[in-house]
Image 1 (cartoon, chains in turn purple, cyan):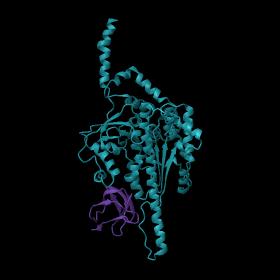
Image 2 (cartoon, one colour):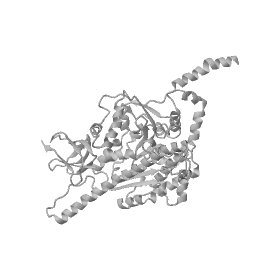
Image 3 (cartoon, helix red, strand yellow):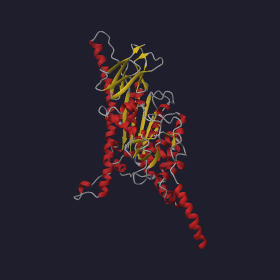
Image 4 (cartoon, chains in turn brown, cyan):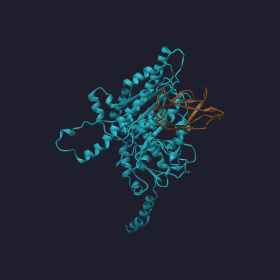
Length: 72
Length: 461
């Protein structure tokens, strides 16, 4: 497995991976190795960018791939 | 006499030939509404906290009885501090071949299995009844049709005498766990094919009207004894068959072959023009345990989302594996084995090796998760001890889960003569009542005495 950490400032928000809602921001999520599209769970759709495409590989729980969304 | 011959020539024979020409397997229907999916099995409301998965292997009545014995034992295991049994906590049952009869019967009829399943299936000579169907002259004409075969006769028999003509729509309308996954094999690419709404969406077809008996028949369509079961792959608006996950996975050939391979199998159905039909055979050809379906749920589907959501606190997978190892004497002979023996070994060696690796691969996945939970906790402990700024490592989603994989198989029997007895049981749909009773008893005992099971129960509750 690979490890992903999604930030939205300090806000707690649902995370959407490949179109499926799973997990929350600020927690290290376990995700299968490969290409994924990450977003946040609206409403409100107050984040940018709307979608971030990442390649997950060679991560660990202590060194997860970090993805950040900004508040708009 | 002449009149009778004329009647035969001009009346009965053409009628029967017409009848034969008309005989056709029941077609799966085009998609009209959402199907039977894990996401929609949401009852009872607290179902996720203790998440139990059962997989029932192939192996004819031997496998069905062993699985039944495990269910019976689970019904007697009361969970400490809860007014529930371990059986009440079962969320998913993934089945293959003989195990599909037990899994589908339990998913459909619940506790009725403990009063009726023996007379409905285990104690019957199903293969004798199937032979009787084939021997019936009325069916000869139906079997003469290119669109009707022995598997359709088997499905009819199961439908009327075991599954009470139930469809997947009946399972879906309840929305209750356990979610049933009946596994077969697509002869085209050798990939696993599951009878779920998600899989049928790839066919542009609706599973709700599909008989459970036909799914079980496909799952147990042993090569040469039974013919493949066929489905229509309907064209569907371009781009609608593949999911976002599939499209991204198809970019991952160099990154993650396993993910790419799963998406490639799905992509085959998207090309309905070149693949208008699907022909299915025994699920054991692609995975004789039913564990690959759980693999997918754990890696990238419903179970993964629930772990990341922190909804699962305890996760237990019980693999009921009825494989046998008949004592071989090949290496005692100077002359090489016969062609038939070689053919049999060629079929079964790879299946057994693959099944072993599937269990161990899944066990590695679970152990990896446990290790990572430990790494996070140990690092936090060290930081707390040696750093003074109070930094908190972001927690692993799902937290400190209790996880276990339990392999219930005859290999776990400590008594060699008892092990030899079970290893000598044939793969057939006809066993004696004594053999069935012994299998049921062994299934319960193998679970109860399994060290991995005991450890999990002790730590989790």
